[in-house]
Each structure stands twice: as C-alpha cells, then as structure tokens.
Image (cartoon, rainbow, N blue to C red):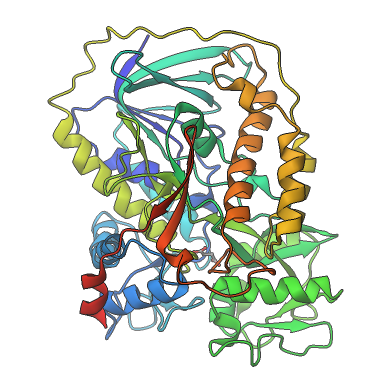
Amino acid sequence: MKTYNCIIVGSGIAALQLANHLSAQSRVLIMTKSTRQASNSYRAQGGIAAAVGHGDKPVFHYEDTIQAGCHFHNEQQVRELVEKGPELIAQLTDRGLDFDRDDKGEMALGMEGAHGRNRIVHCGGDATGKYIMDHLHASLRADIDIIENRFVYELLIDPVTKKCIGIKAKDEEGKNETYQADQIVLAMGGIGGLYAFTSNEASVAGDGIALAYRTGAEIMDMEFIQFHPTLLYVNGRTAGLVSEAVRGAGGRLVDEWGTPIMTGKHPLGDLAPRHIVAKELYQQRVAGREVYLDISMIERFEAQFPTITALCHANGVSFDEQKIPVAPGCHFLMGGIVVDAVGQTSIDGLYAIGETAATGVHGANRLASNSLLEGLHYGRKLANHLNKRLTQNDMASTGYVVVQKPTRQLPLLPNQVELREKMMAYAGIVRTDADLRFLANWLRAYGESETDDMSLDDWSMDAIQSLFMLQAAKLVTNAAQLRLESRGAHQRADYPVEDERWGQVHIVQSKKGIEMRERQHEYHQVEIYA
Ligand code: SIN
C-alpha cells in the first residue's frame, strides 16, 4: 500500500493551494471524486475579494464581511483573512497569474453584493475560477499524485491512538482501495447537491460533512446555507450561475412587467446582501411571478461575461429581449466541520479547509467573492502548519492496524431526486417549524443511524451517496429547526427577526448529540474597527 504524508480529499482552490505550499519533501496525494476540473472553484465566475484598490483597506473589507454575515463571525479569523487578501493576490500575480486590467493597466475591480466599493479581482471576465484553477494545477509539483474518480467513503481511525490514519475509496468500477497518511485533509466543498436548485457542481453533495460526522467529528452552523439569487432558470429548473457581477455592472432584477423588484427593499437595492435579494425573489416566485435580470444597460455584455453568455446560449436563452430568466438556488454552506485556526478538526490527524470547514469567516451569510479568498488563505495556512510537523511524523512507520467493521444488510435509503426536492421545499430559502418538522419526520424514516458501526465496503457508490446525503440533510434540518430566529441566510417565517440571545450560540452536532455552544467573541477586534 502506498503511504503519504498528506492526503488531500478534493480538488478545489483550497486543496490545490495547500498542495502547492506543502514542503517539497512531503509525499502528497490529491484524491478527487470526479475529474480535477469538477469543482465549485473551477466554476467561480465572480472573482476574489481583496482590498487592493486605491483608497481601499482591509478594515473596510472587514466591515462589509461582518455586515453581510450579520455579526456572527469569528472576528479574529475575519481580520486575518482580509489582512492577508492583498498579499495572496500579489503572490498569485508574482507567480504569473494575469488578473484582468483596465485601460490604465490597473487591476480591474468588480462590484458585487454588500461590498462598499469595487473590490473583486477577476480573470477572463467571468471565468475567474477556471483561470485560477488552471494556474494552480500547472504549478503543482510533478511528484504529487492526483487520483481522479475516487469516491472516499470511510476515514480510518487508529483504534489505540484515535488518530485519523487513512481513507477508504471506491474506484470507477466500485473496487475498494485503502490509502494511509500522517494527515488527512478534507477539502470537499459544501452541500449544494442536497438541493434541487443549486449553482454547485453535481458531485458536491455533503460527502465531507457526512464522512467527518460518521467518524465522530463535530459539525456546526449547518442552518446557514446561502441561496444565490440569480441562477439561470429554464423550463422549471435552474441551469447554472448568473454572477452577481452582472448586477455589479448595472443589471437589474425586474418582474414580468419590467418593474425593478429591489427598489425600496434595501439601501443597496439590487446589490443588497444575498439573503435579502434571494428572499425577495423567492417571494416573487411564491406569488406566481417570474423574475428576470435586465441586462439592457450593460455595454458589451457578451465580451464582459463570456461564460454566462455561453451558458444562456447553451440553454436556449437568447439576448434579443435583454432579459435573463432567474431563480434562487443553493450556493454556499457557511457552516461545516468544526476546525481551529489552522483547520484541525476535533479528530487528531484530520483537517478540513475551504467550504467543508466552519472557520467562522462567513458568519451567517458569506460576503460575495470571499470564498476563493478563504480557500487561498486556509490552504496556505494549513500547509505552513503541516510543514512544521513533517519532521516529527514520517509516514515511513506504517504499523497501524485497520479494524474491520461488521457488514450488515443495507438499510432503507431515500431516493436522491426526492431528497433534493424535499430539501428545496422544506429547508430552503424561507423555513417554518411545520415544514422542518415534516422534513425531519420524512428523513427519520430512513435507516441512517443503524449504519454507524457498519462497514460500507460492500455497498454501491450510489447507496453510499444516498447515505451521505441523508446524513447531511439531517444535520441541516436539525439545526434549522433548532435556531428560533432569522439571521442572515437562515430565514424563519415563524421567527422573523434576529434575536441577540441566538447570536451568542452555535449549534454543534456530533455523534455525542447536539450542543448549544457559546460563540467565541473577539470584542477587542470589533472595537478597533468601530
Ligand atoms: C457570483 O459570481 O455571483 C458568485 C460569487 C461568489 O459566490 O462569491
């Protein structure tokens, strides 16, 4: 069996940034569920938020992040993130990545929702993710192993030390493989695939969260799920993202009559924080009205937004009327696996970065274009941490014993399409106790808890996927049911206002049960910025 210092599960921006910063001595494996391009990072249209413009400062970026996320952050982590922003952009530029520039040769800075100023660096117009990811792939050391099309279904724990020591995965034919490493890093994205309407890559369906939870890790803030207001809406389904940068360039949300729908709803209008715009669109749709993005005022739309133009054309949407039909859909998970400041989970040897991790930098609602920045920052930070440990742990010693778990009959599992429809309808943009209770009962009918100590070796990938989706859906539903307030992306029709008492607690779930954990404040940081 091949052994590694570090196995990274996932191939998005956090994964590649980590791999690129791990020391040249470390033996690294990147394992990904689909192809290396099949990540949300690769699809990112908007760009990276960083205080690089004239007159901009990390403190302004900090304030916008905190406002958008409804003051539910780990303030220290936010401060560090925004302070590192300009340096991370400079590092990419120094290593040869060309961000788009204006006529004067300055970096072109885009505008997106809830930002107080133009702050988004981008590449190829709306193809930022593709450019950055191609750049990061090209920068990888030749001796880093990359294995595609592997479904990781179990984390191996040493029975004596309780340390995470490896993974089990299924190849394309469903054959089982085992890999061991000193450190396992989950960088597997969020949970978009749990919802019928999503901007996410189809393969991103909560696997990282479910894997960690099954292994005993703590999971937090699962009720905070961002719905992006503008996904392309064709024939009753969503078909991909229409970037907020379109509204940043002047696009306006209108109803069938051409009336702007965000006027008077928020001082920032069409560029209000995402949860406010998504909720407005949701209400329009509930009232039976279609919503469009009016792009008539945007000059050279096709040249500025080539990815969106191609997406619209591929889905039969012409620009004759200069209107793009849109609907909101699941976009980003603010919660995830509980980690410390470097990405260490509650299990020794197991780390999480990127959307899979709950770092506290997004609060209750992520500020636009902060997620690629998060991936860059935490990827590099974790690499620095692991590089220091490399000398202490050399995987040459592989004396671990992997305990075989019992094999039992497959329990009843939900149909994946039905689960997505149910999540959208009952744990979507606006939630109620009645809906969540119905959903919780529906999910409870399936036999997930019976699988805790069971071997999944003989299960098909499809059955394991259903199990993971069930597990992640339950974590979302439990948390959404428990949080009796509306804050950021968690909107409850029956508890419509923010409640200061709830602002003090995280809902933490693990195999041990559910805990209301007091939120760690860094009040002194807030005062500095007041
Ligand atoms: C967008 O381009 O609208 C999405 C960017 C993001 O989610 O940060």
